Image 1: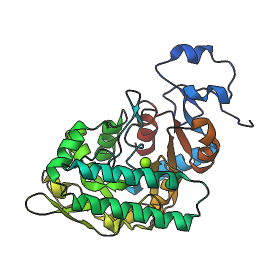
Image 2: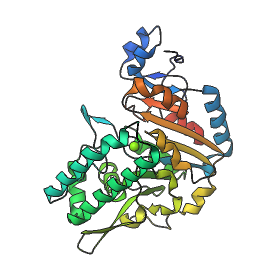
Image 3: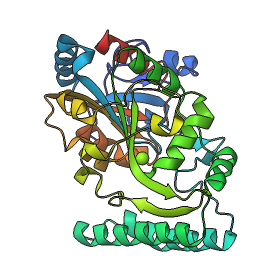
Image 4: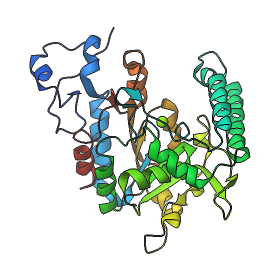
Length: 333
Ligand SMILES: [Mg+2]
């Protein structure tokens, strides 16, 4: 199929070639040839090694003070599969107290999701459809009287988990004062609750740009703040939509992260699971950007396009631990 896969290298090397699953050492030893039939076992693919090496050198040369991380949330920071089932998204996990509204939102999903993934609908038309979908869904959340308590319970009951190593990654970035922008078409309040419940701590370097809810004093949803962020307009949103995570946590001393400072950080590490996520850095005039794509499903069909679009591609719901932390530590040490 014309794919030139690179040599198998030890897991500890830095985004070099292709890595195999650490849990399958026997496959590593027995592998003699590399072809598309074998990619189910691979974890990391680097398309243009030379280009990645140059970018890594450029980022290392100026250090962590010039670096920022921009990450998608669903299926990028979170796992795609959990115990053999698809993990919930920040939208998908939400259960309103009035179940009639859950059914209505599911009906919207059943109608719009096939349109979202349709390859034949022109992008302008699809963008309007996505605006419609997000608008109707948000309206149902308000009409159905969503409470913050329901968000807490929904997250607690959800099938959602961070990829292995995400907490350690955040810790490393916090230690090096590298800001992390989580940029999502999901729901900011839910992402915050997932961080709170799953990581059990807050990070002063993390900000979230996503659809943010406004609650009344009794914890009932009143409205959404600002322009709706859906899957096709992430690139239109300026960083000044970012709201400090810790405004709500009230646990961290000192001023919130200043978004204008993020614009001065000219090196970007971007993480996403859709090619459209590459647009998350459109608001920045970066000098060097390393893009990491998480190709979670339809690997054989999509590998070529992901490898062309992203500098580094993680396959098969790969963990961030082992394969990610060390390359990153080398970048910002
Ligand atoms: Mg995603």
